[in-house]
Length: 532
Image (cartoon, rainbow, N blue to C red; front, side):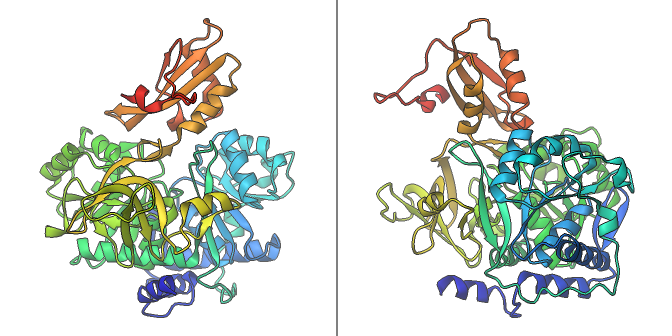
């Protein structure tokens, strides 16, 4: 009842589900542009019509039912929000999928989620071809960045049901769609996050979770930018990542904002170009993004007069980066904190006295924070312990993983983050360390056990341990310590072995060969000693 009351407090208009809020925003902002990308615009009206057509296609042509999972494996392009909202409007479950995933990673996510349909790029079909026979995928919907495609030319021998995205999302104002049966309790998204067992877990986010996170984000934006009538945002953070998804696809759409999508955030020139073309008022990012922008030769040519501020998340804001940004742009970076399990929202700094550099701010509206000792004792302000969160945006659990759910969420609804924190007397939260050995590479989670699991697959690896080390470019980088049986095995051989099994950001940047690795008295490899 407590969580229901918190959700209701964020829902003064009494929306019965997330989709009703979406419908109302599309109607109120019909003639406005919702997304712009590579010289093309998508209005709220077209987003409404095309996502409705896609929802109807899933229901009527593919005969999918409410609750079926649909994986969307796209970069930041206009087709992404159409597909994502279409899936949710159909009462189905969106499975956000990283286009950079390898065959191994895709197979796990498709199999674990039980995805029936995959929306993907035509360039990714060769990899999809390799994994679909091991999954429940029955149809592919293909997007081509080169323009309209003929599915007859895209032969996928192991799957007959192949559809062109443009054809199945053809806008028709007469297309009827009934989403009224959806409730806030219905599952909306499976957001996969790294797992300490070596495989990612699907955080189950309901329509209520996503709605609450969107309203909490709106409160944060209103606090930071109260005088901006209609923010214009850069969507550089990947939309398949919960941070970018919340800011641009959910909160941005529900609040009628314009998001300028950047398909490849590593292409700094494209972000610079967006700044020059649009009166950007705000955007979200991570240290590496801010640094790459400031280091660009044309950064000084940008007019920042419209820029009110920036929200930083995904990894701790480097103090020097924040100071340099403010000096060069005249705007401030506001650090926040959230996880996939909380739909990206938990804490954020605010304006004036609401901002303390070195903290992630205070808990957002409707969210409670506390820290506990290892024995579960609730600690007083100023004491260091594991950070726990409670609020209507907290997931209901991990997909098909009751053990992980039970160990992460208490019976009374507190989510254990695995992060060590201090809550100050004034309520500001300071993240001290991570209980888990997660490595943050450019804001992406890398879990040592997954990388170690791949290394152990190599026939010559006897022992290994993976840790993070500081990196000027990515915040942290992956470093592997390896004991091998065959001394002729070199770094190149191991990296080549990993490259086909891990996304690029998970690859070790350094491999150090050792005769042995430090262990505890029970034989456990001590990563901490290797880091030190």
